Amino acid sequence: MTVRYPATLQLNGTSLTVELDAGRTLLSVLRGELGLTGTKEGCDDSECGACMVLIDGQPVNSCSFLALQA
Image 1 (cartoon, rainbow, N blue to C red):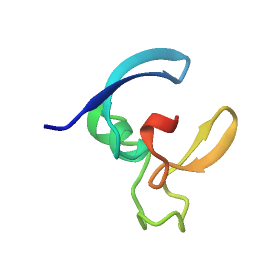
Image 2 (image 1 turned 60 degrees about the horizontal axis):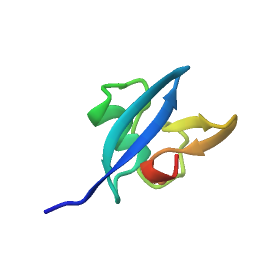
Image 3 (image 1 turned 30 degrees about the horizontal axis):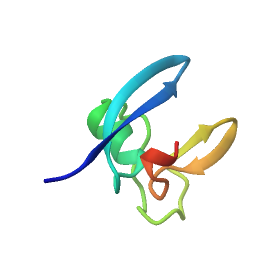
């Protein structure tokens, strides 16, 4: 059984509460659970920048950033 953790994300000015697996990347949550396919998966290794998002105004590669850290 996978343990899921509640998390509140501020996304495009909207507060969302979701339950997340500990090991899920922010990219997989944005695309898979929230249906936000504008964030692209490129190299899956933090090299290309296709998955870049802003967290607190700072750019991060969401393919290597755990969703629970967001």
